[in-house]
Amino acid sequence: MAMTDTYMATEPPREDIDALPGAAVLEFGAPWCGFCMRAQPLIAAAFEAHPQVRHIKVEDGKGQPLGRSFRVKLWPTLIFLRDGKEVGRLVRPDSADDIAAAMRAIDRGEGGVG
Image (cartoon, rainbow, N blue to C red):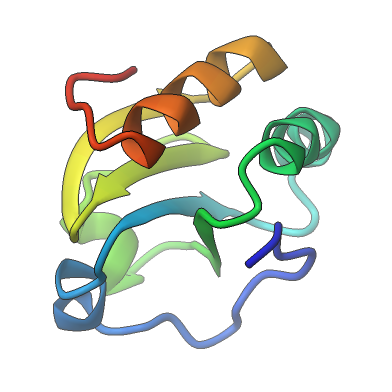
């Protein structure tokens, strides 16, 4: 796996996310969002060291059930998952180091990141 460059226009159902095995990062945002665009190089840098972590990039917006189920309010929001369970989140990350630290934790199966 590697970082996904484009947002999914159709979001996966929450049940599919809850059933994911292993480490995954769920990214909520929008392609026109300035905060999201500024975060992309930081996210890409973190994924370089963790290519085996699944990246699911979801275009969020008003009334989107997946984002609401995770109580996303600001973009980008990165949800760090281990075996389908949220173990941490970063909202509007401004450091590749913070993203990489959270990814290391889910990659090793640790909890309590973000």
